[in-house]
Length: 169
Image (cartoon, rainbow, N blue to C red; front, side, top):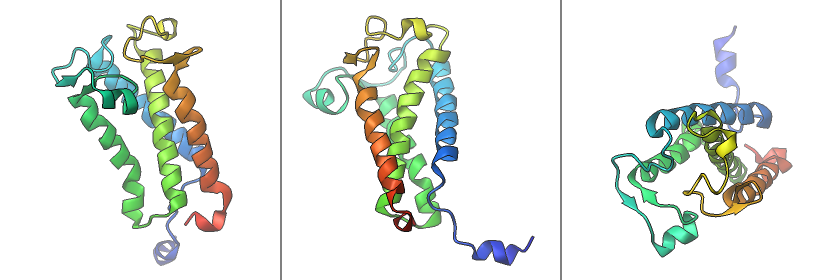
């Protein structure tokens, strides 16, 4: 294999959607496993030795009414930085690439949250409901309202990021 020829190829800044979605699902599964090992049956860092802000009007607006914890104050930006790393690594940014990264972050958190219940022996699908999950304060039908907000938004951002292939790079 000609190394010089490989080095001269433009780096794929925006990966194909399907393999990337599979990778997001794998990452969500692994992070859900980490959280299950850390939290056990006490979701939203309830039993962790971390600081908590239980109520504040900004939490109602930006956090779905959930408590802000030291754990989440570090976990959420870590994941955002992790997903932005390819843009930094390749030294490239575009609006299409940013839309795709934001979509993947949203999908990651929805999948990770749902998988936490699926794989957690203290919960399972049977206990994925408003009565068993007090940290998700707002539910619509059978899922937290954030799922219904961020899933269509993520699909829209993914669609936007693939509309014009010439703008993807």
